[in-house]
Image 1 (cartoon, rainbow, N blue to C red):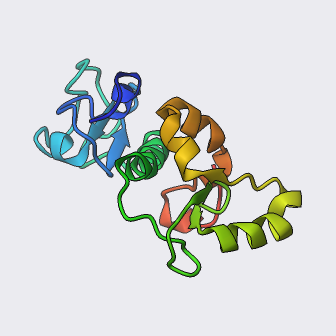
Image 2 (image 1 turned 180 degrees about the horizontal axis):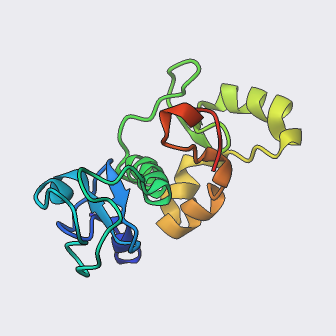
Length: 159
């Protein structure tokens, strides 16, 4: 379960995590399942505001919520002690680089620091992340450069 501070990134209809959150024109966020129950979508199921989308599902993904969910998923893996392996050599992952979004063993961490430290890559010990809060983890990963437009015609454009 998400910490109370992060309940806002759930679907406002079913209160579940979803990888397909859609942002309505009234700024409510709903999953595809909840939106499919209300086809054709002519008003928001939460506030009853008329939507500009007269038929079908809104095509605007809530990229911020989806990105936060992905980062919290990594945090949960770290806290739960799920098998964390170095993304380079598959040994035990003892560090996490939020810039590379990779787990690193001690040997790969040393190489990482030698070559990428100047580029502001700050890998953290998995043990230190476990000792901290989800907020602390997200603060260390708070970059907008990871958000990409969901429109297939804009594949490489960052938000």
